[in-house]
Image 1 (cartoon, rainbow, N blue to C red):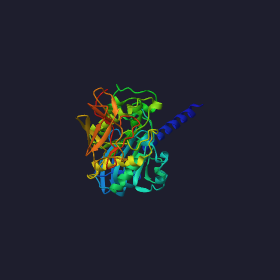
Image 2 (image 1 turned 60 degrees about the horizontal axis):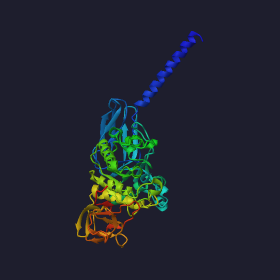
Image 3 (image 1 turned 135 degrees about the horizontal axis):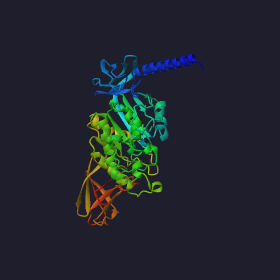
Image 4 (image 1 turned 180 degrees about the horizontal axis):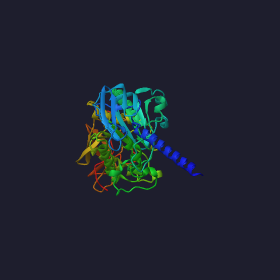
Length: 469
């Protein structure tokens, strides 16, 4: 090759490099948004919502929406964020986000209620997969119910993007969406009369550890190192971090089976509290409501070889989670299936989660939102009287039969089947085999399908009055 041709080749390569650099600079200079800001989205009413994206460092960004115009500049890392004044439910609106080199236009934006739906398979389980909601899917044409379905993804580092888009609820969009989330949102939308948005971020089989942010994960927690999706923080990084701090009203959570199988009841409260408090801190909008599902009865013995009371201890731990501020628990003792870890009645479950939200977040003071929870006991000769919180309109047997699944013991710690009788808002428990009773247990077995509830059709949660090991 001649020296002249060699020089021409170098100049051509240099020119190509310069053009690529200019092209990349042009691309980077454009204002961009995370996927959760898109057509058909819903923004939370009555809050200063967070709207963010990326641009060149120092670039001026102008956002126009619902009669408001706000301006900001990208920081040194190219990230920008604005928080317009709160708005009441309504729409549809248009939104424009304008930078130096481009303008993004969004349409059909609504103001309403936004909820995150997370957990493992009983949250992920879709209407179609449940197999019992064919007619529900066919009729699911609800323009004021919006869905954002985050795909399953793990990451060793926090991600900023997800491959998802907003969809208006229709038979096509809803069939692969969370059944639990759908019925929760549908019930809320009907009761509130505003647009409701559901963000699904769930993965079947995951333990709680993958959902805990890396900055707060306790390395002393042991976990089986058996699967990529079970590693600490990986689903948080790939499926929760990308939507923070998108403003939400709150979260619903259905998870725990995978931790129960690992006999994790001693540490689950700490892990759950760490996850909830860290999500709240990262979202930076206070102690937003966090409503969770108590696991349904299920016979773990054949496959998982668990003791018959292991699930009962896990139920106890979940009930303890109510001590975390602004939480609520939907009890499922009457809608489980001891042969199916994925019980099909998500309609009633979604409603029970929604009752907590309606009572606690939407001012529906006349709603009974919880079934009976154990409060205290009193020994009365050869009987024990049990008192409850959340008796609602009164206690009842939901099948109109004698109360089931009560046992009683003396100081010998041997439990016997007991007779249990409703007396006003209490239950009196006794057994001819226990003359000096010391403790009562209710539904303290994984296959229990008890019938105690309040007259508002909400079942009692399992409990024990003792602390015996």
